[in-house]
Image (cartoon, each protein chain N blue to C red):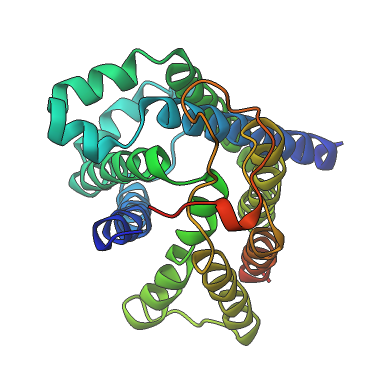
Length: 146
Length: 126
């Protein structure tokens, strides 16, 4: 794992959290949309917060795909779940919402999970990575870390 | 009955998004390190190679199915149940699916990580 790759993982985390926050803010302004007037959904894009949220979620998707090109799914998903911590901090310090003790415990567990997975290798090494993914898993010592 | 609908939709969300994640991960592994490819052949080539992967398109489709299932789940159940239940179960389902279908080495460390994150997400809703 290089510094650049950690930056991509940080991008996955940040862009998703920011995108969701903007989308939520925009959709609150737009108001309720019923299933019967689904075409109205198109016009929600005109709301600047919704548009900005979609832009950030596109950036999230690009970063997520980049990460999946060189890291395992079971590495990327837990490693980028610090977004929940970020959302709780945004809720407490920016939106001044009450964050309960139980929630902080939950955030502690998530952070512990992130700590666990990021200490291990990012990619399972398959002998011929491109075409034959169904070989036996390699013993621990022979796995390589880019 | 409403309860059964809600959980049915939650299961649909979990299955669809796990399938989507596995397909997207498989597609990107086939494409290879995007950073290297970009430097060697340019961004257009990278995007072209990704879009030509059938598993990528199928993965996007499954993500869309997951999104609309989530909308249905939300229309039947409370956000405080639907959002954490589907997110949390997806972490565990992904660990199982990645081991079976992607042959990833899911060791103790990764199981612990998936379970801790899943439990943490559940507590966020409490």
